Every structure is written in C-alpha cells, then in structure tokens.
Length: 252
Ligand SMILES: NC(=O)c1ccc[n+]([C@@H]2O[C@H](COP(=O)([O-])OP(=O)(O)OC[C@H]3O[C@@H](n4cnc5c(N)ncnc54)[C@H](OP(=O)(O)O)[C@@H]3O)[C@@H](O)[C@H]2O)c1
Image (cartoon, rainbow, N blue to C red; front, side, top):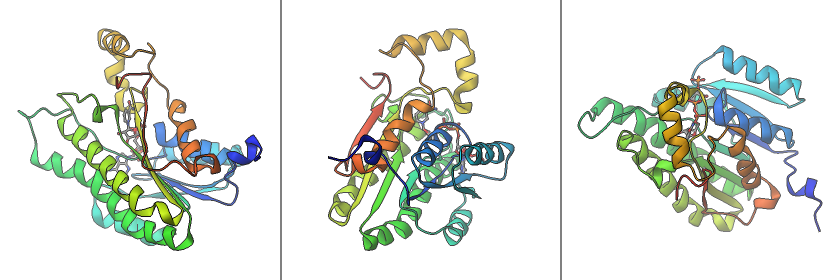
C-alpha cells in the first residue's frame, strides 16, 4: 500500500498552469509545486502579480520559471508553444469573461472569448497530448465553470466556451485513456478572485449569491487546488473523463 505522501507526490514532474499569475491558477500551481512538481507559471504579460507569485513560489522552495503569452492571440499562443517543452501536467486555467446577454451579443468579444477559452487550449493540446501519449504519461486538467450547469443570462458566451472546453476534455479522455494520459475538467463555483472582486463588493449582490450557495460561503482559490492535486497525482491515476464541480453545491 502506497503511503499518503506517495499518493500525492509529484516529484520529478513538470506542471504548466496557464493563468497562474493570480487567482485559481496561482493556487493550483503553488499546490502542485508544494507536492514536488517543477512549475511553469504563466500570465498574459509580464506583471507585478506574476513576479510576486514566482518569488513566493521560490520562497516555498518550489523549482519554477515563468512564461507570458496572450492566449487571445493565436500568434502569441504559437510563440508560447515554441518556448515550452511538453509538461507532464497541463492545467488549462486562463480564461476571459465578459458580461453579455443575447441582446448585446458582440461578434468581436465572441471571437476573443472563444479563442482564449477554447481554441488556444485546443492548439496547446494538439501539440502536447501526442507527446504525452508517446511518453505514456500525462495529466490534463481543464478549468470549466459552474455556468456549465447553471447558465447565467449575462454570461451567455462565457458559459458556452466552458461547456465547449469540457466536451473537448471528455472526448480526449476517451481517446487517451489507454496511453496513460488522463483528461479531466474542474468546474469552480463562485470563487473570490480579482475577476469578481467588483461584483462581490456590492453587498446586495454578495448576499444574493451567498443565498444561492448551499454551503453558504463564497469559495477561495485554494478550494480548487486540492482537486487539481488529486487529478495530477498518483492517487488520481484512474480518474479520467470526470467533470468535478467544486462549488459548495451551487451547481445543484
Ligand atoms: N473566480 C470564479 O468565481 C470562477 C468561477 C468559475 C470558473 N472560473 C474559472 O477559473 C479560472 C481562473 O479564474 P480566476 O477567477 O482565478 O481568474 P483571474 O483572477 O481573473 O485570473 C485570470 C488569469 O488568467 C490570465 N489571463 C487572463 N486573460 C488572459 C489572456 N488573454 N491570455 C493569457 N492569460 C490570460 C491572467 O493573467 P494576467 O495576470 O497576466 O492578467 C490571470 O493569470 C478561469 O478559467 C475561470 O473561467 C472562475
């Protein structure tokens, strides 16, 4: 029987986490690093947040480096792929979202969100998954959203991109299962990060959201990190094709 430590040991593995300068991606990357993985942090551009996260990781003894690329721009995504080797663990976390109903549906915003949240992920997986399959090992984790289950009228495009990415992940899970590569999706609920800081600063809105969450608390980025660690770890090697809501019940 494997020790508990061994079940979650990522020593010798390399993890690339997109959008890990801040928020959920940062918490996931720091957790994978603490479990022993070497971490490639990523942000859309050089920033104080990315530098601070890298410094924090180094202070924790995590072996790491950082890369930047705007994933809404396919040339930038391609340049990123020229800079990084295929990791053992790929977490596709970066995304864009804009409040948009069908009435104010914006063609350009559709392209920006679809490219960032779906197409760039597919292009990265097109390059990396075949290498993972050749090696006989890979862990791919896509980050979806509670909006897959509970669509918000104001996030019509964003919800669609998350559902699309999850479907891609499920398809790949089936294709790659025989080659030691698992592919899973985590669907966070309402998690307090920079992205929704303004929304959550409105007391009425915050109380309305709290009311809808059965656990009756807004999540924090670290709430997502444990599930990512499980999926990346030896303990999670038989989990593939799962879409795991981490929502405090908000998806119900
Ligand atoms: N927070 C929630 O309540 C919630 C709920 C459901 C799902 N999610 C999902 O969880 C993931 C993380 O969300 P979060 O709340 O942690 O986000 P966040 O705090 O807004 O952080 C976004 C991260 O993505 C990067 N990013 C943004 N636009 C990018 C682009 N065009 N190209 C490359 N990187 C880009 C940012 O880099 P920079 O620092 O360089 O800008 C940052 O590292 C997302 O997929 C989101 O859809 C979040």
